[in-house]
Length: 334
Image (cartoon, rainbow, N blue to C red; front, side, top):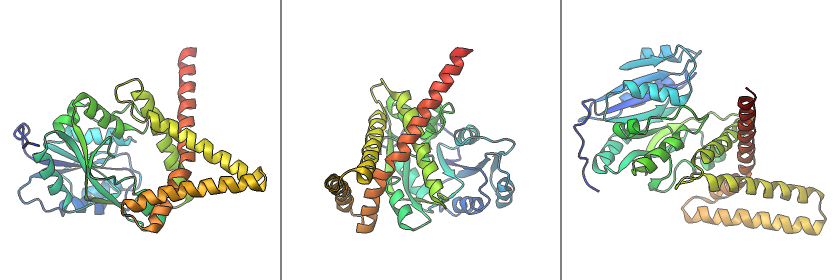
């Protein structure tokens, strides 16, 4: 990996922090303050806040905290639109996107900048998200946010991008419902032949905001819709992203539902067999997580979680497919 050769292509600042938020009055001040507290002695930066049409005073709070550029707020915008709006006004060589419900780790920006400076083949880098809520469910969920260090297929919305790579890919796609991050990463990897990279170091604290089981259900139904849409967009390409995952989500959801039916209605002998198979599945996944260094409670919780989540994921995929059919029927009728 060689040193970055196009360092002078963009003028200062070195990095633009683009923070987006919608009704984040509870979190936005801490988020913006965390950027200002980052030690960047030899790095120039700008702080941009883009409001997605908040009605709780988030924009006023951001103005009071102090940002270099305040955008948005006049109407409701989705995350992809907000990030693109901020990126269009940004001047930095690097773009660090942050959500308003996050608190940036003070050492992250310098580490990310240093890594990108050294590795021109990497277009975007991100680190570990740590959920603020430490209950077992949240500790389990964040395992999927923080894979092993190295190249990955996709990252979330919080990451540091090279501006030239981001612009060459067209920014975050605004013509998808939820999957703008994976589709952007897919374009970078396939069109530019550059890497998306995960660093195994803290990037930010995150408040996912789940308070009830309905929050979990809605989030994973939405993830299912994302799987379906991105799989449909990438199907038939040399990199059919999430096509396999879309199939396995359906398959495991069907297996789980059949297991429930058997456990409720079948004779005792059949119930015993199914129960034993379910236990073996959970133990196998638990063992995998233990080998990766996680504790027994988190490993077992993840084993249960990863299978149960297939049901809302599959339902989200079905919802997206039905919605697409309705839209296609409406277009053909006109």
